[in-house]
Image (cartoon, rainbow, N blue to C red; front, side):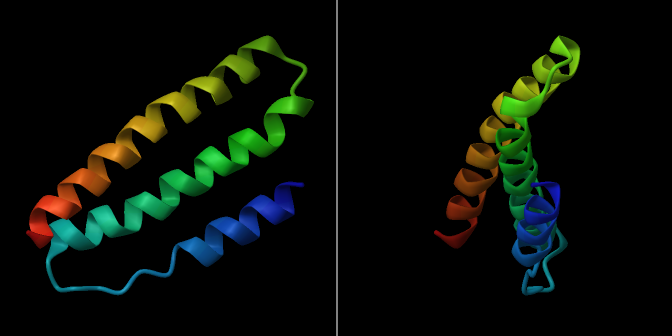
Length: 79
C-alpha cells in the first residue's frame, strides 16, 4: 500500500526546469501535493486513530485547494 504511494510520488516528481524559479517551484509542488493527497486517500480506510484520520482528511482538503491555486497561477503565467 505505502510502497505504491511512494512509487507514484517519485514518478510524479519529474519536473522539467524552466529557469524561472517561481514556475519551477510551483511545477515541483503540484506533484508533491498530488502525491500527498493520493497517499492520504490510499491509507485513510485503514487508519484507526481518529486524530491521524482527521489529520489525513485535513491534508487532502488543504492540498486540493493549494493544487487548484497553483494550477490557476500557472495558467495565468502561460497567458
